[in-house]
Length: 223
Image (cartoon, rainbow, N blue to C red; front, side):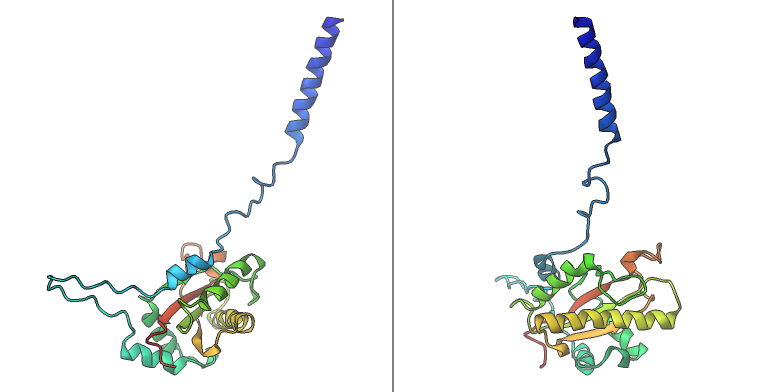
């Protein structure tokens, strides 16, 4: 009797182990989306905040740090494109904007889009909403921002240029409609496939993105 019980226990153990091995993997390990690259409002605020001026130290003859305010040339450029449609910008103006934005506070939100489309992907919507909240905060409200659209390397240059412009416009339209941000405070520009985020993988999703740059803080922006 005792031997039979031991045999039954062994059989049940084998069945239990077999059932466990046949179960599907936990969702936490299969297709886990916890690694999404959405950012928070605070992260955007920190990235786009103008550099703080360092206080002068008494007794030192070191010159004060340079004012982070934009130069007259940069201000003139931004004022000339504020309120303009994305497609009205010339290639020269696009490159001038890229040069002026190079050293400004910026963040690449990696706002992705559906393939071959200007529709914001569902997984990137939290980043767009965080951007809207950040741009309407007292710390950033009143600044002028460049919203630059990018594509991956698939397709021709003309097509990608048009697609990148439509993607930048898509973000601008969402921010204006949902967060009442002034359209003239958002300068949209498209760069097509000319400025890939990951050149080693030209077709990667991260190349289909929008970058946001703080061009002027609210104390220097000319309204």
